Image (cartoon, rainbow, N blue to C red):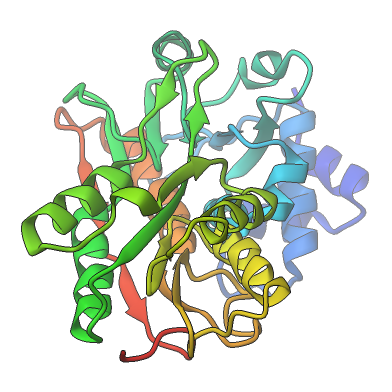
Amino acid sequence: MATIKDIAVSAGVSPATVSRILNNDNTLNVSPETRQKVLDTAHALNYKKKSRASGKSVYTLGIVQWFSPQQEMEDNYYLLIRQGIEDFCMQNCIHVVRTYKADVNYMDSLKNVDALVCVGKFSASEVKRFREMASGIIFLDMPIDDTSVSTITLDFEHAMRMGMDYLTSLGHRRIGFLGGKEYLADQTLFPDTRKDLFTEYCETHGVFYKPYVLEESFTTEAGYHMMRQLLESKEFPTAIIASSDPIAFGALRALNDKGIRVPEDLSLMGFDDTSLSSFSTPPLTTIHAPAYDMGSFGANIVFNILKQHPATALKIKLPCQLIVRQSCRRI
């Protein structure tokens, strides 16, 4: 069985440093890289430490990311979720095994994890397999009706009402929606609740919208293509709400190509509040989605599930916030 000395030799640090890291000593002044290296080495050597306080072994948490690494970099919503998870784990000396569904045999790397954080959209068969792999599990950004499974999602209902209230307060009564379609592993279409909420709001408040609703994918290219389609019609809306910032950026490019000014000729609102939204021209009014907090809370909850084994699952909806910048104006 591996010892603290074995870990110290392999990681290139002192045994005292290893001991303090494995005991979650927050007063130890080491870099995050060194801390993670020690945790990775302990995991690789199959080191099992019993804490005198809790009698628990060192935890290993698996992250299942439904996006590929390339998709994650293009749309940093899911990147922020993962960073929130990993930062919590680093601060609490939890070893992380990160996987992407695009990886070959990605399930094999999760065989020995103590808990799972599943990020994104998964089919019923995938959910079943994940639940069989770990007792501690939480799904982020995917509602699951099963009351025995913990989930964290965004409060889309309040978010869409907040965004639409803002646009109608500016006098807009012809509003379009640009959305994306997502498919599960079994090719089932995962519905975007935001579209239904948008439609319901327009019907209730007398907003004209039917010719202005398009759905493709959550990419900049799709936003560009959908906006070009709208511009080919005889009339177009006075405002657009996009279900992601990348879609909004694509729409903004299409409008610029046609010489249509934002917000003078058309108001544009995004969703997510990605890091680029404040640097577009004009800066994008958007709805902030607390992606990083979702990841951090998710890791915290599953950590406590492992320690306490609660009988009740948690169903959490995180509120979003309207970020007003310069891409919308009063008619």
